Length: 510
Image (cartoon, rainbow, N blue to C red):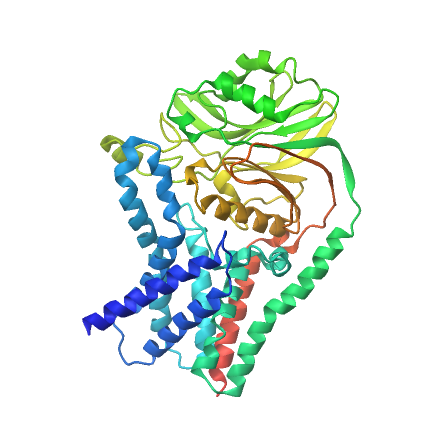
């Protein structure tokens, strides 16, 4: 019996690992029709038994295989500092083991709720899975990375539904869709088969309506801006955080990449934390580098740290805006910090045993209080920008309350992910946020993907991973506010209520 259990657990780990192939950069979403259907068939058959002692473990092993195979790159961030290398085996195992707990809760609750009807169980499984994924994305600091919905990252027509219901709602529908083939295995009932066919038709409907939406957007007139947004992509080594890298050399390189034209009104967007060992208040010391290359036609947005003194030192990760004289116009302090990357949980205790945040040699960053829209009205520049720094792009439905802005500026440092699938997964979130918000996302990344993404999620211009250079954004199409940007995750709870209704309805049908 024990040997049989081990083989079953290995089978569940394999199903989870194979499901990872549906995520960026592979995007083989077809594989989920096999893995999720087999997973549901397995659970349904086990639920028919009188006793099942492994209710939690079924989901845990599936989740462990899933997260182990698609989050291994997190350990790459520990290779840059000798003090952290001993943690690599723990990161490889403990992070997937922790995240798998959420999937274990799914299967435990699935077995706990008594329900013998096949279709009701399918909807129950979907809503439990989707709701637990929502909790995973919001509990503590939240980690909504690699939701099943990201399997459709390359299918923009289908993804247009995000502008109405958002990622979490779409995630529930994806689970129902991928589980639908299991009905053919488990039932010969015509009503059940009809429901399965209907579920499989839904993405076709999404594709058709999404195609019309994209064509409608493309038919809008292009409006030329009275300025150019020049977005930098760079590949400056991540070791600058640990070695005594010359800030002067880095700034010269960034100016060279930027190729400023004195006669063209230009907004330059530089990546996150790009200049080593220089704080926001120190940048004016390098004014001499900008004097010949920049004039009143230029504004500079860049990621730079802030050091504030108020009884104690406070450090912030910021997106700061300077004019051509390097006078600070405005800045945004990052609100959603990366656990262990930018702040150390339980720092008073863990700091005593030699641990520290990865990206900051002095102490944990402090979090900004709120995310305000940056309004620029300087030297005839007139724009409103929603700032998002790196990790903040992954949060669906909670990145803004006021949708009265022109663009989302997203800056990032993806070098922590190494040469892995991590930067591609990170970039995929930008596509989802663009469709949800109905806004252009202007993304500048060091050691990552730099791009201009339009409100339908189409990447209009792009600098691939590992390439230095710039891309220009000078004209746009004006897009209507999306339903999701107005109501956010309220749409998710409407979908939850719909699924509860379906569970009870199908449970009554004989």
